[in-house]
Length: 497
Ligand SMILES: NC(=O)c1ccc[n+]([C@@H]2O[C@H](COP(=O)([O-])OP(=O)(O)OC[C@H]3O[C@@H](n4cnc5c(N)ncnc54)[C@H](O)[C@@H]3O)[C@@H](O)[C@H]2O)c1
Ligand SMILES: O=CCCC(=O)O
Image (cartoon, rainbow, N blue to C red):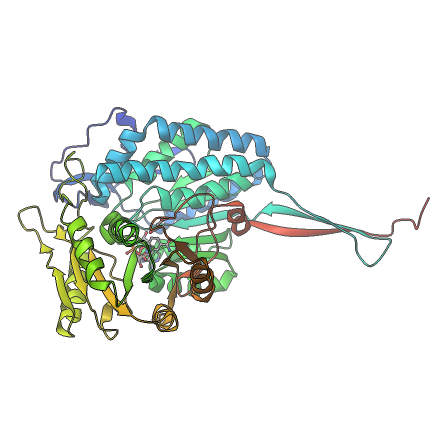
């Protein structure tokens, strides 16, 4: 294949820029098949990495399986030290890791720095959880028996992640897995593999044993690599973050070996503003919630429901805030918001926008393509009085479209909010604590955020219900998905002495 020239990013530590897979402590360069990593803002090639065949994935699974036999017996304190070292190394290399995220994902540099801190926080959190895998002792009905439980690592974990948080979506899984004694085989999205490779370099420096932390790479071969992870009896757990459709594929493929699974899938978050809400706060938080990652996060507000008495003031104030955005290349210090990941994302925003307008939505901020900046730049759109029949009420836009729907009663808006097959996050703005409790308990989601638009934190159990998936990441609950609870009974004890 003709190999076009490209310039590698300028980093303080050039070693963080890797173009090889990482298996068993070795960097594996490609031989004849590669895929290119492109800066979505400039369209420039920034890296060329190997398109790995199934045989390499099978090798990665074998080495992770072999490494697990010793890694599972390492001291929890040892694992804790490796995790904390990796946390410190990520923060020491914050600027470089953020630059890599911006170049491969397109998000603004400040947002990328926030992701690195967020990603690293999972290593810190699980460095503290590693030595605290507690069991229980139980007094059985049989007086001559004693029962206790222990938590044991499930085994080799396959980790498949999306492009929107190239670093954090890996660490929230890998940190918990490594903390409890599992080994990991990570498959990043082909659009954003460089953050995973930089993390592998730092994991090696942190002291993680060979075979415990592995990164495999694929673009065209992704379905085959995914199937290999799902069908291998040596892989005991698959954890996936991405679209619901792919999650369903992986679940089917994992059924032959009854894998332990955890899925963080699609969202369709309602953002509800009651008439007694602090309007300025609600607007401010709607902006950060809706336009974090330019709308490309699974917990972004996808549908804003604002009480009919304040919807017009809310929409105008929101537009005034969004007009202050500066879209541009993420490395430009003037940029507040970057670009979307690819042209498919823009097509979807356009489709949702035109559908809502054709059904009577009012255009508050036209937004649209920004060809002078590049094919993946799209100015935010705000629509108001969107009808409930609009596609955007049902489908996740995953882009810079902000549809505002009107409502009158609590019962009505909870009905709208729950009328979706998704159930990840929801937002409620009100000064009335009864409203916050009542609505939070009525919403069919895994997470509810009250009076704040960004709630993500390594200390909370993150995850959804319905077709947004199952399992939780972060918090003390995050280890449950990477361990098995074993019950031990000691029988035939003497009645007494
Ligand atoms: N719940 C969450 O925490 C969360 C976080 C981020 C993204 N998401 C969801 O992900 C979607 C957008 O991300 P995306 O477009 O990257 O999702 P995607 O499902 O297309 O891709 C996610 C990952 O799966 C891989 N993949 C794709 N097809 C596969 C297959 N057949 N077998 C194995 N792996 C396969 C991709 O290469 C990528 O690494 C949105 O729906 C968003 O809501 C959810
Ligand atoms: O979109 C993926 C997850 C977002 C978050 O963890 O806040």
